[in-house]
Every structure is written in C-alpha cells, then in structure tokens.
Length: 288
Image 1: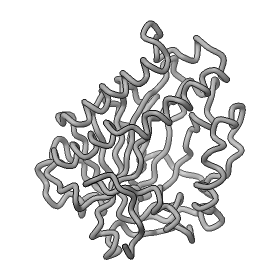
Image 2: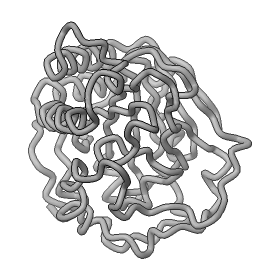
Image 3: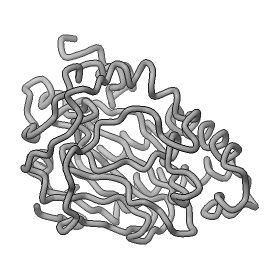
Image 4: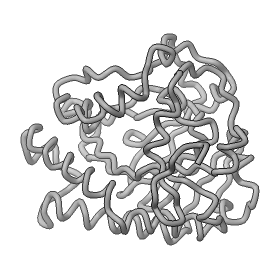
C-alpha cells in the first residue's frame, strides 16, 4: 500500500491506484472543509449552540441522544447543499461529475463506547464494504468533523487488502438490510441486534493504520480495504463524514479492486442508493 499526501488532485489516474489498495490523504482541499463547516452548523442546529458537542454522552440520557442523532443523520444525508459539496469535491480533484455516481453522504456520531455502540452509533467491526454488497469499484471517503485522536478514529488494515478473510457475507442480504434492517437503527440502544457481515476468524492488528486528522482532512481509499470503527473509550464524541463514489464506466466494465472474499449475492440491490453526481438524479441500474 502506498500513502499519497495531498496528491489526489495531481494524479489523474488515481482510481487505478485506489483499486490497487493505495490510500490518499488530502489536507488542503476546500470542498471537504466546507462540508465539515456545514456539518458543524447542522450539529449546532440539532444539539444547540451552547452545548459541548463532543461531550454529549455526559449531558443527556442515551434515549434522547439517539433521537437527536437520528434526526441529524436524516437531515444531513438528504439535504441539497451536501450533495453539491460532493460535486465540488470531484471538480476540485479534476474529475468530471458526469462520469460519477455517489451514495448518500452520512454523518457518523460515535460517543464513548460504554454509553452507546449500537444502532445510530454502531461500532463497525473490521469489514470490507463489499461484504455489505458494495461494488468492487467503490471509492470511499472519510473525514473527521473535529480534530480527533488515534483512540477515536477509523482503522484501515492494509495487510488484508489481497488476503481473504473468512466472513459471514455469503449469508447476508443487502436487499433485506435496505428494506428492513436499516430503519431499525434507533431501536438498537443497549446492543446491536441487526445482523452484520463480520469476520469469522481472528484479525491481526499488527499492520493496522489509524490516521488522526483535523476537520476536513479527507481520506480516499478502496471500499475493499478491511476497515472498521476504533472503539471510542475517550471522553469526546467523534463526528465524521463519509460518502462513496462510483465511476460509471468502471462499474459497467466491472473494473475495480479484486474481490477476494465477498459472498453477497444481491449487490445490485444497492443501485437504488446511487445518484448521478451531475444532476443528483437516481441511477436506474447498469442497463439504463
């Protein structure tokens, strides 16, 4: 794995590098910084301007937290300005929005693990997004909204990029997740009862990478990387933003990272979550 610093907008063939397992870290792009600034405004609107947003787990019952986070997530994911800033990101790195699809953007809220680690703040176990039915050419982005520490961040484990991991994805259905399980997030408070695709073998963390960034410093990497949530035992709630990009020609030509171990049989069920980046219209499938 290679790590490129502030080179995403300088590498015209970055997609092939991502598909090969390389990771890009950009600290100098305007669109991600604008996206985080908008996220802070949304968080303030949801929790109040006088509230220490990074100490929410000390300020309210977990049931109230879940209600407020659920509302925040829905408003952020579905608002037009966020979609426009994703388009600005692709333009800023020299891409053509006409060539890309995107999945709905998400704001993640990860408080102290003992306060909540299920449902709206599920702490994802090591996984590949392909285990959740993502396409092989999915390009992931991730950025913190506030400065974070290694104990709060997301981990990537590049040692497993080309190494199969025994996992439960063959028994997992994306269609069921979209139509049944996803909406049950706020009902999972004391424990996560929704079924996720998970490793069925021990994962070594010897090669695990944790990047602790500042607001708007954005990671770009393949959805086929093994990654997951670092259990947050700190006293600061972590806010982060992620969205996924799919290059249309790569999708149609079935280009992307090698699928080393995903067994999901209904990946096309996720196409309904894709939007054209050019005009935000729904993607109608590979045959449109």
